[in-house]
Amino acid sequence: MRLALNAWFWNRPTTGSGQYTRRLVEHLAALAPELDILLISPGERSFRISSSRFQGSQRAERETSNLKPQTGNLSKVWFEQIGFPRACARLGAEVAHVPYWAPPLRCQVPTVVTIHDLIPLLLPEYRGGPLVRMYTGLVSATARRAALVLTDSAASRRDIIAHLDLPPERVRAVTLAADARYTPAPAPDDGRGRARYGLPERYVLYLGGFDVRKNVVTALAAYRPAASTIGGDCPLAIAGRLPERDTPFAPDPRRLAQEQGIDERFLRFTGFVDEADKPALYRGAVALIFPSRYEGFGLPPLEALACGAPVVGSDASSIPEVVGDAGVLLPPDDDAGMAQALVQLATDEGFRAELSRRALSQAATFSWQRTARETLDAYRQAMR
Figure 1 (cartoon, helix red, strand yellow):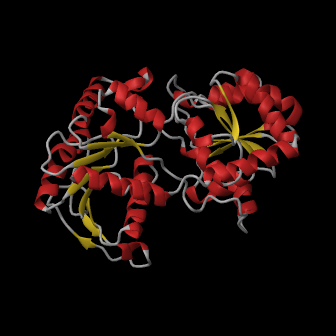
Figure 2: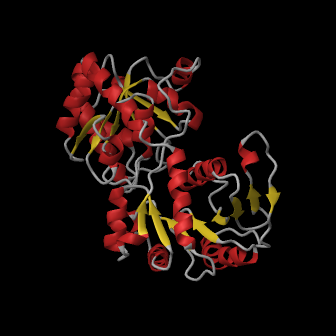
Figure 3: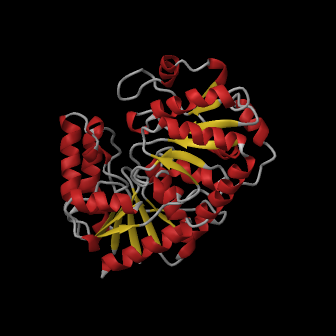
């Protein structure tokens, strides 16, 4: 089978779509060495992947599609709608995969598209200006032309069927997984890694973005009453690149903490966390607090579970599918219930040990091997 894959995000590994693309290709190559994978990107960066690339060899045969390297929104649309389908035809692909919400309107090759979530369609704060709304309208229309739509969770599948008016048989939920480095086994440099971010031996962790749907204001509101009991021993670590500007879309958590009256002695703002350091931060956490209002999947909770850290968070969208019974999930605005859960996890060793055991069991139900196998099945169905 010759697969053409839209590789727009291949060299953007810090993005969710970039991580998904790389992990998927790595495991597809291991699962099906006979699969001929062509990564198509603008410029002379389109190349063929073989399984040897992920077994120590860095050799890759370049398959240029003669696309001019360009930047900007219009060039991205041109690539998605014209350049990519042309390259699929020229290179003799049998099936195409766009691993983010941007399938071509017309393509000679059966196309599979992964729609991770419908955030720009469902959440008013994310709809953007006229150009963004036009783009959302375009990709909503083109999704209906895809042979199959993949998405990360049953919750997102329900949204796609309802809001894109797609028949259920053409939409599949194929879950994601945590990277193999997320394990409960301590690494020799875990302590040094946590020390680089000014973290003590125990803490409650928030790790993620600061846009409004992440609901960091509830994480702080939950910690405020808990701090009187656990603050001295278990501060709240707010990890992630802080907003450059304090806006309604991305409120600065430092201001929110001041407004809530949280003692600054009980807070740690780590700033940007390197990907390599994240497992150490999860392993040191008493719990991950994750009160997000909407997630297509929710990778931070799964990464935390894979490291043995229970989750205190919201019961919204896909989060219950990811967390299962390995955490305490409540309505997104129930800061009082989340505060109680944080105190119990920090003070009741038996309770935390039981949730940690469940966390590892729940995380084990997700794997990139399964993701690759179910995606390969989707390619075969699309070809039929």
